[in-house]
Length: 504
Image (cartoon, rainbow, N blue to C red; front, side, top):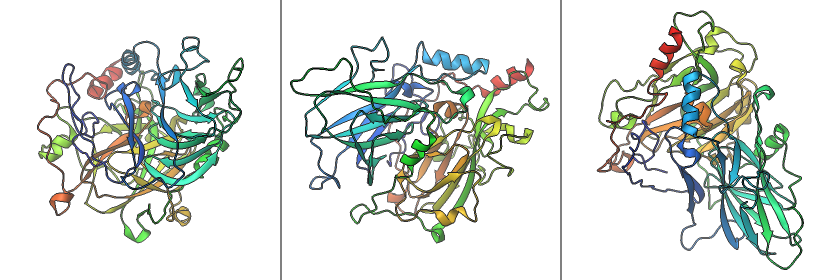
């Protein structure tokens, strides 16, 4: 994706679209094929404002896998009881835990296991012998999901709009923000079979809240006696099955064929190296002792900086029009201190964080390596699905424990690394990515768990223009949403919020 002024995150590339107004987005595609998705990027509105983007092969070309007979978009999403924004605002005001999904949905329906949905469960009818391409989007707010179809094998052929080496499997694991294209051959006895999703939890057991499994029905056409209930997939892993999660993830490799080559930066190409910690924190209060403030607001951070959005304008306008005082360019390449990142014990310096609007500036066309390190500060280590706007990146390595910059790079995959927009930092582990900064502009990057994004686990890159018009930021559209009517949000009022908590 190379559209900048219509990238969408509020206060990053535009101000929010005000009630009663509209804004037209332009999407420019480059090499993507397959399934991508779009979603709102203002507060938690993406819970219900989202959809798929299907990109077919160019005319005259074919898929690098057997041609499917039909295809279907399957969107996995979240369901919340009550008024979601009010629940989020209340949790932020009272410094309590942000909402978790009350249910999950497949194409808008929770499925047969929920009384309110039984009878309206989503169904996909199929013909025996045909092959179907399922375009699966995980639009879920916070949860990675296992997904399986009873008694059917699945073949994963694409991830985030890029071809991968086919993975033949009985289940998949898909993170929030990811898309997967999956082939299914309808080759079983005529009948009805559950398609089912189940939350994969990397939280500590004491804080895990598991919802019911979400179901849809794969129903064969033909004359046969319906069973009392569809068959449920026995291969669907349990909630905390880390072995199943790793077994699937380890198989993801780029297709890396002559027709679909890769261009991963080599060791000698790298000009910028960054080591970024992702942590759960508490906001620093100056006149307190160690965690002695009343109801210290929980927060998240990257390199111990908890992001706050600009207030007066969006980041892109500030950069494009050279408006000072909106952001600073001192996002650090390293965390302020090094410690045993995955240890359960922690000190005051690792718990408390500060807020800031700090960006990292990159020159056009330089090669970048980032190692994301998960931490267990405050017992908050989970799988963090890291997402980057404006770029696809190569996942050259990942592992568990503290990253070792002497030994771990020796195992980097530079032959067929996954080429993605979103990938998980393992619980108590690390993720190494590489990309070429050849898309000028202001680009947001963040954890794709909305709870962590809301609390500050994000930052932005500014990529400078190249030497030509083709390698420079395009002119902005004639109309951009106004910043003159700011929306009330925790991010805008974070300084007031912290002062209130300190004064109590």
